[in-house]
Amino acid sequence: ARLSPEQHIAVASQHAQEGRLKEALDILTRAIIEYPDDASLIGTRGSLLLSHDRAYEALVDLDKAVALAPDSAVLLVNRSQAYRKFARFQEAMGDLDKAVALSPDLLPARFNRGVVLYEEGKYKHALADFDVCVRVAPDTAGPYFNRAVTRDALGDQAGAVSDMNR
Image 1 (spheres, rainbow, N blue to C red):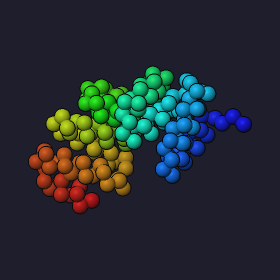
Image 2 (cartoon, helix red, strand yellow):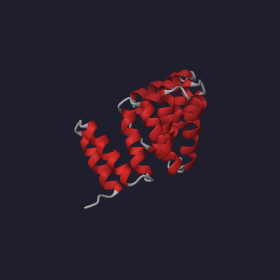
Image 3 (cartoon, helix red, strand yellow):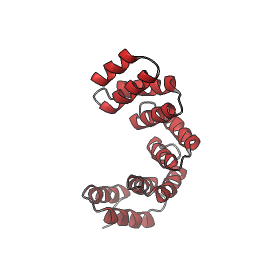
Image 4 (cartoon, rainbow, N blue to C red):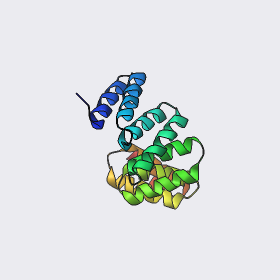
């Protein structure tokens, strides 16, 4: 029986979770041959490659996936991470800005954009993104930590301590 793209992704994800990267990539590659225009398959392979420090291959896949699905906020966030591996910060920020515009409460978009803004020294803008992250995911530690560091950079030690304690 022919598997759908989603079923291929599920099988590949199971292999990846169990440490069988080669098998996961093989399944995705075969599925992409079968469904060459499926952005989710190509994007999943790109994200898997990125998570295993194969940034060049990941960027190739993520570029293709975004070309097929230019309004996918998740694909844009993933491609921004590949861009950052190559110090292509302007392109990374462009993808993150578009991802936030498409999906304002998407935690990875806001979180990663906040990180890039912080790295650029744009602390007030970074703080605004981390504020959204805390609102969207109040039980997640990462946004509190990043907001604390950003508040400290802005001279708000009391706010920084409060976030660290949280």
